[in-house]
Image (cartoon, rainbow, N blue to C red; front, side, top):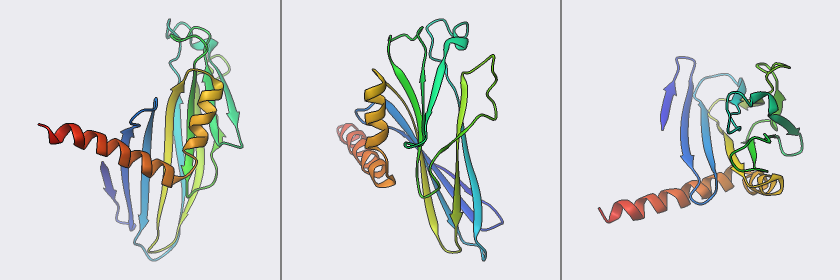
Length: 173
């Protein structure tokens, strides 16, 4: 876990973990406003896709597809170590649905992509956002994984499963 507390009354916690049995990792951000006025936050994430076996030479072969219904970006590269595999990046939580952000994208290098979400946190309130980054055998499986973790409660349940697994191993030491 990483903690930040600013003089403005905002407190943030970042928890990063890998799913117990799924090929994805989560970045959970919890924001608490202990200040006197509401805060409007712009949450951003960026990914540099490195999907090709011949990376970085195969970067230009990476293609991305933004699915606005899922708030997710799917990325593919025909030079992938596992042919047909699809990477994905999604955002879920208390903010607005993920929107595509091409701030760092260039026509000659399509391997950068990002997501934006807006988060309003009232005084005394705590809000949460989770980013997921993963890889699946194909597009259907990638969509299934994004759909499986559509709510923060789903991400929390996966965190609990992961921690139980870790604790089982540590308990025998």
